[in-house]
Each structure stands twice: as structure tokens, then as C-alpha cells.
Amino acid sequence: MQIEELEILATELEQNAAAQRNRLLRLCRLHVRILASREPALFERRATWHGDEEGHFDSSYPPKQVYRDHTGPRTIHLAARVTEDVATSGGFYFDWRRVTSYGGLHVRGDGRFLRSVEEGTGRVGQFAAHPGDTNVSCTITWSSIPEDDLSLDELTAAEKALRALAFPAPSGRLTHPSRAH
Image (cartoon, rainbow, N blue to C red; front, side):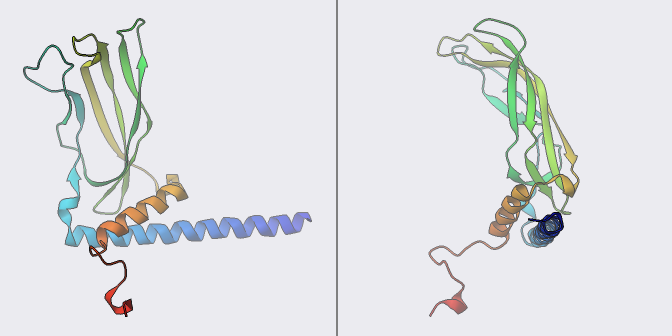
């Protein structure tokens, strides 16, 4: 291949990717507009805190972990946040800090995409039944992200999920009634 042919190929691939991205963004926005009008309850308030359940618990077991303070944005959940607990002390029972390796993906009713970051601390503790997390206190912060930061894979999955919510398939029927003969 000549360099000119490679340049033409590279340009075509870039244009195709840009066209696909724009198409997926338009479809996502349209699905969100429909959902915001028809199903506003799907946009749920998100938590801003994660940690130990309050109140008395059986000391043989670690406390339940709960999400609280649902004062974050109203969104539809599209992809899960991925976190990792990094040890900050040694031994079998250890302190840790939580870091977010992927902020997940949510969309607001106005079509803006968001990610979240969960940060905080906790401890793997000894309990009679089994070891588990305790003294967990993590905050969750939400932020809008530029559409250019979304990968084509994320946009494809988001469009598919939003389409399924906006236009659920009737149970037991896989085709539109006008196409069934």
C-alpha cells in the first residue's frame, strides 16, 4: 500500500467512527427525552454515602453495608462503578482505603452523562461467623463527563439499555404487530 492509500483509509475510518458516535449520541438523547416524559420515576436519586448500617447488629457477623444520603443527581444507571480496596496496614485483618478504577455510567433526564467516584476507608475485621468489612465510611461524588470521553463501546451499551427501557418488548412477542403474519 502506498502512503496516500493509507491516509485515505485512515480518514475513512475516522469519519465512520465519528458518524457512529454522533448517531449513538443522538439516539441516546432521544431515548432519554422519551423516558423523561413517559417514565420519570426511572431517574432515581443516587446515594452520596456508603458504609456500615446504623444501629445494633449481631457482633458475630460484620455489619451490613448500605447506601445512604440519596441527595445525588437523579439518573438512570447504565454501567456499574468499579472500586478496589487497597490495604493500608498489614496482616490478615487490615485497614483499607477505597479507590475507584471506573466511575460507571449514568444519564440524567437532560441527557448529560455522569460518572461517580467512591472514596473512603474501612477495615477487614474479625467476626465469629466470618471476616468482613467494618468501620466503612465512603463518600460518593458525581460529575458530568464530556461526551468525547465516552467510548464507542460505552455508547453502544448505553443506547441498547436506554432503547430497552424506552421501548420494552411485549412479553411473549418478539416482533412488532404489523410485521407478524
